[in-house]
Length: 279
Ligand SMILES: *[C@@H]1O[C@H](CO)[C@@H](O)[C@H](O)[C@H]1NC(C)=O
Ligand SMILES: *[C@@H]1O[C@H](CO)[C@@H](O)[C@H](O)[C@H]1NC(C)=O
Image (tube, rainbow, N blue to C red; front, side, top):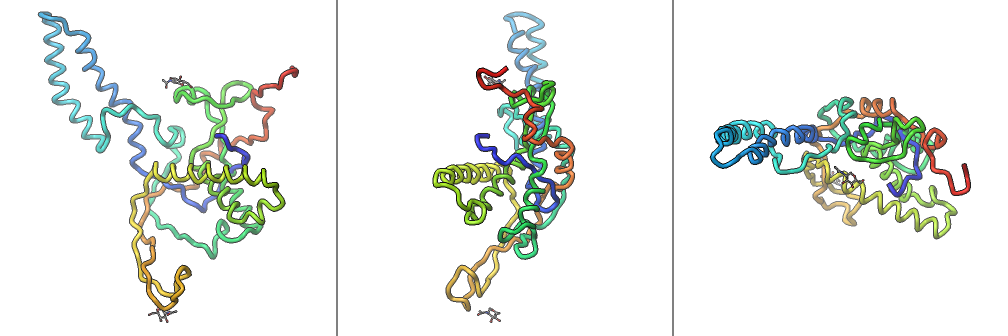
């Protein structure tokens, strides 16, 4: 990430990370492509007037007719031509995902994560991000064709689960809302950097929301005395979120990350490039 000034993570139970059962299906896509391979073999093996070729051809026809439709049926809604994906949720953390149905309390009055700047709010957001940087085996990163920065022994790379990067970004947005408090006395130049960072963050959160669409329904109610409208007696349609959401429980996921937490201030534990002239 181009912006990474917030190397502290968090751990906390409050805010749910959104998730969807559909994501688990990504793990099947690789197998699907393995199943396609006999078709490829058939193409390579077929020679004109060759008995084996014809037999393989017949097998392949049977395979295409019987096996592939079955395979596709077990993975509804996936385009078999899609390239295999690594999956939106890193494999090791899937073991930490426990799904439940719940409502969003969206409590802005009695919630340490909401409201004006105060020590309780800062502490709650700090705890939420405590585990944002973790160590993952280098082998796993290699498997995903990802590079990162590595520990001195070369066995681990530093990474963040995307949900933590979203939370980090949300924190940046929240801090910009109260910039007189959080960015007091900063130069114009520093504020321009902050503004760019927040723009990056809004974009990242947008991408994450659209990546894992929460399709539960937010309904409407007639509400009078609304904050947004001048006429306090008139009733206006107002969003009201009463649906059940399919959510991953936050604690097990955060515990999983907590067990792998890495403090980015421990730069000496990493293979750190030296500036020219140093040894
Ligand atoms: C792996 O990443 C490198 C660059 O980081 C890229 O050139 C290469 O095509 C990637 N390979 C695969 C299989 O994705
Ligand atoms: C809003 O509607 C309720 C129920 O009809 C009514 O009792 C209340 O006086 C209304 N409030 C305002 C500000 O008009």
